[in-house]
Length: 241
Image (cartoon, rainbow, N blue to C red):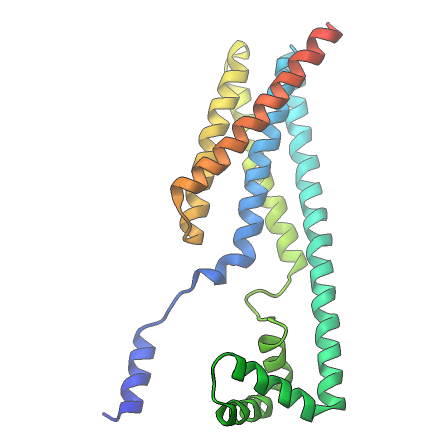
C-alpha cells in the first residue's frame, strides 16, 4: 500500500467529531431550558411568597410558560436574523471585491496564510489553488471566519429556544401541581435547583466543559434569582395584605 493510500485509509477509519459542531443548537437549547426553569420557578416562588392561592399560582406559572416561550422565540429570531443579515452583507461585499479587484483579494488571502506561518511562495500557491476552487467560500472562511458550522439560522434558533424553554418551564409547574400547598415554595425551589443542576451536567457533557463549574454556576444564579423573587413576593404580599 502506498503512503498516500495508507493516510487516506487512516482518515477514513478515524472520523473526528468536534464539539464545535454542536454550538449552533447547544447554545439555544441550554439557554432556553435554563431560562424556562429559572424564570418560571422564580415566578411561582414569588407569587407563592405573596400568599396567593394555589390556583392563582398555577395560572401565573402557565402564563409564564406561554409568554416566556413566545418571548424566547421572538428574541432569538430577531437576534439571529440580525446576525444573518450581517453575514449576508459581508458576503455580498466580499463577492463584489473579488469581482472588481481579484488580484488584491489574492494578495490578501496569501498574506493571511503567511501570517499563520506558511512560506510566502507556498502561501501564494495555496491562495491561488483555493481561489480557483471556491473563491467566495475561501474568503468567507479565511477572512471573515464564516463557516457552515457557525452560520446564523434564525428559524432553527427560534424553535429551539421556544421548545427548550417550554420543556424547562413545565418542570416547576408540574412540581407545584403535585406538591402540598403549604410546601410549595420549598418544593418548587428544591426541585428547580435539582433540575438546574441536571441541566448543567447535560450542557457541560454535550459541550465538553467542566461539569463541576457548570453545575456550580447554574445553581448559584438559580438560588440567587429565586431568593430575590421570594423576598419581593413576601414584601409586596405583606404590604397588600
